[in-house]
Length: 335
Image (cartoon, rainbow, N blue to C red):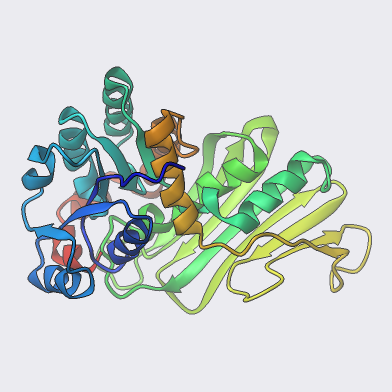
C-alpha cells in the first residue's frame, strides 16, 4: 500500500460509524466526518481534533480533496446518498445493505461502472479471517461436497433502526454463506418471521435459500435474543465445520461426520486481525489499484435481490403498507 495520505470522508458517525471513523483515521486516510447529530460531531471533535467536521454532506461532495466517501447511515437513505456521491465522481463504500430495493442497487452499480468508480458494500464477514479460512478449507475439499449451511445471528437490539431484522443482519449471513461456498444464492424457498412487539417491524426472521448446485442455506436472525449467538455451520459429505464468532479462541472447528460430534477432528488457526480494519484496507487498495472489491456493486445487488424476494414472501400486502408507514428516521442518530 502506498504511504501517501488518502482523502476519505465519512457520512454518519453513530454507533457503527465510529468504528469506520477510527479505522480510516488509523490508516491515515480520514479527511472529513459528517453527521446531523450535534453530539456525534462533538465526539469527533474531541477524539480527532485534526479531522474536519460538518453537518452537511454536500460539503463532502464539493470538496475536491475528498476522493472517496463512506456512507454509514440507515439503509433506507443509502440509495439517495450513494447516487449523489457517485454522480459527484467519488468512490463509495456503503454499509450493508446497498439498498432495500434491487432496482436501486442495480442502478448504483451501473452508475459506478459507467464512471469507472469503486463501489464497495460493507459485507464485513467477507473480510473476516476465520470466514476466509473456512472458505479455503471448503475450496480444498476438507469437508467434501457441501450439502447444507446454517447461519444464526441472534442478539438484542432496542433501537430497531432498520426496515426489519432481516435487512439489518441477513446481508451478513447470505453474503457470508455465498462467499465460503463459492456459490451464488439462486432463490428463496421460504421466509417466515414475527413482529414480537406488534409494531409491524419484523424482529425475528427465518429464511431458507437455495444456492447454486442445490445447496440449501438456512438463516435465522433476531433482535430479541437475550443471549448473543453468532454461528455458521457448514455440512459436507465428509465433515462439518462450525464457526462460532462469540468465542475468544478456537472459533473455527471441524468435525468428522462419522465420529461423535463432541470431539472436533481439528481446530484451524487464522490471523487475529480486526475484520473491519481489513475491509477498510481493502477499500483503500481498490482505490489505489482500480481492483474490483470483493464485495462490489454486483455482490451488493445479488444480496439485495434475494432479500427483496424474501421480504415479498414474508409480507402480505396489508403488512407491507403498514411497514412503509414506519418512520425509521427516528433512530438515525443511533446508527
